[in-house]
Structures are given as C-alpha cells and as structure tokens.
Image (cartoon, rainbow, N blue to C red; front, side, top):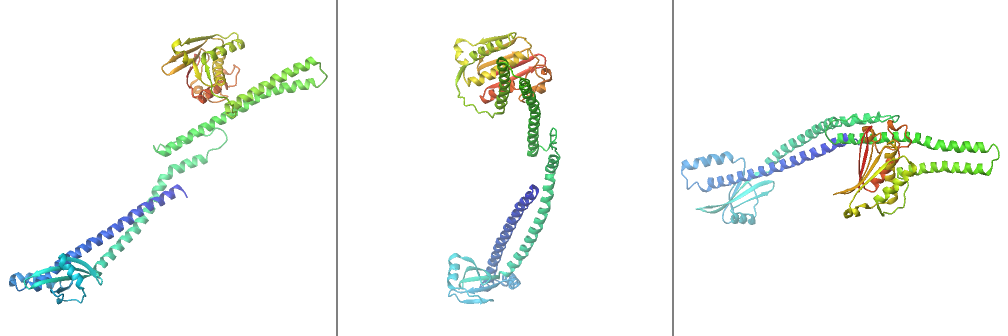
Length: 447
C-alpha cells in the first residue's frame, strides 16, 4: 500500500472516528436534555392538575380562571391520575396501573420520576385541606422518539457526508503532500549506474524529507568515493602487480632458453623473492586498510619517545639525506605521560608512515617533530615544509589511493597516510591536520 493511500485511510479513520464520537455524544446529550425537559413539564402539569381539582374551593373566581384556562389548554398533551390516601383514583383521564409501592415511594420522596408502558411518568405528593394526595402526570415516549429519530437521521447523513468529504479531502491533501516524494522517486529512478552518480535535488521543505534527501546525497557521495577508489585500485593493482609479474615472467623466459650457472639461478631466485615480497607487502597493505585482516594483538604499554627515536634511526638508514629535528618538552614530573597504553606495532606503523611521508614530501627540507604535554595529555606534532595539500585533497584525506597532482613525481601509492589515520581511529587517538599548498603540513596527535 502506498504511503499516500495509507495516509488517506489513516486520516479518514481518525476524522471518521471523531465524527462518530461527536455524533454519539450529541445524540445522548440531546436525549438527556429532552428527558429532563419532559419531566420538568410533567412536574408542572402535575401541580397544575392538583391546583385545578383541589384548590378550586380555596380560590376566587378571578384567581382560579388562569388555572382553568391553562389546564384545558394543556390537557391534550398529557394524562393524569389523582390518588387519595387510600390509593384510590379520584380523578383520571387515563387508565394506568400504578402499584402501591410506587405511590408510597412518591409520598416518601415528595416526588419521583419513572417510566411505565412506554410513558414518561412523574408523581408528586400534594398536601391539601381535604387530605393528602398523589398526583401523577403521564406523557407518551413516542413524542421523544420522533425527535430522536429525526436527530439520528440528521447525524447519520452528516456522518456519511463528512466521511465522503474527508475521504476526498484527505486524498487531495495526501497527493499534494506526496508530490515531493514522487519527484525524488523519479529522480532516483533516472540515476544511471554508469559514471558518477548525480546528487538528488533538495526539496527545501525544511522537514524530514529534506533530511532524508541530504542523507541520501551523502550516501551517493560515499558511493562515488568508493567508485573512484575502485578505479584507483585497479590502476594501482595493475601497476604494483604487473611490474613484478612482468619481471618474473621475463626472467623465467630468458632462463628457460639455456642452462645457467648456479650463481645465475641464485640471482634469479633472489630477484624473484624480492618481487614476490613486494607483491606480498602490497597485498598485506590492502588487507590492512580494508579491515579484512584481524590481527590478534593485545593492548600493551609503550613509550612514545622510544618509538619515535626508533623510527628516526630507521628513516636515517633508508634516507641518509633526510633531516629530522626532534624536540622533547616533557619534564621529569610528567614523564609518566610518555608511556601510553596502545598497541606498539600499530602505533609504530602509524608514526612511521606520518614521519616518512613528511620526509618524503619535503624534498630533504627539515622535518620538525615535537613531543610535549598539555592539560589534556600528551601531544605529538609532525611539521614539514613540503608540498602541502590542496583544500579539496584535505577534505578527502581518508580516500585510499588518492594523490594530489603536485605529488605525481614522488613515488608512493596513497596508502601510508590512510593506514596511519585508520590506526589512530581504531585506538581512539584524536588528530588534527592543517596544511597549506606549497608551504607544508602539520599533523597533531592527542594521546
């Protein structure tokens, strides 16, 4: 069932239920008010009957005349019966059988309302100089039922008309409210999987629909990044695997042409081992960054300054021309901050990638490393005067294989920084990267 249909049915059920409840309330309120008015009228009629029959001898002709006229004016609208102290009818224009218990109840309470044989009845206890009497006035219930039936027909027709109106009104409202959804659905259906996925036009409705479109556009952006990453991945794999495979294949073809000396076979084996090691290292890197490799490392403690010195010595061996300046600003009182509870192998890989990148992209310019403390803990900073990042590259810093145009002549695969950032996030280490194109990059880690 479509949302707009479900919305229409929900609105119809809701407003129909309200109309039904209101109709029932109106019906019963009208019935109670009518019943109350009837008993009030019967009480008046009972007193008028008592005055007419019992007060004639105590009133003058002038005082009695209005009672006489009013009684004969209303006599066709109700019936009455007068009972004496022995419960005998002395005056009556009807034939109603009232039991003694009811008459005694009227005498005890002074008045009582009840129904009998489809009649509303109200009896009063009337004291007179000639004795004590019970006067009962009767009115058919049929008069009330006629009014109630007329009201019921009006309410039913009103309910039916209201439901029809609400049905078409809710359909129209739901269709109007669903227009933005229909436009978005049409845009989504029009998206072609070939090439980059276009963003959905925001409806600017200021409601949950706009939030949904914004979230969907973020999903499309991530999908586009994945597609770009896949393209870069294919290029990277083609380059990183094709070169060693071509080398291995060429060497094997050459060596298959004739017999070789043992020294030549050893050289071939060493070359193939090196090429296979490069391929294995590349594969391990890809598995690491994709999160498919689950290493059974346990958390341990390590001194960050010792890790940094170890990395500096390694880079010095790999790049003798590199210049690394290391500043340690932690006094003896805060020396315990240098010991951090973190996986040593992972933090070593992280810091090595950060420092190695800073050295590699600085073209042998000095690289500054600072280890200090603040009120929040230990802070490690890597600052270089290298090529820097563009703002666009900085926004997509976590995209694998992505390399800036200014780094095309520098060997690399665009994975080192990504691995470092993934390690920091995995170990809940905050970081901040600031970079200016052509001036350098600062990376700060907060342990």
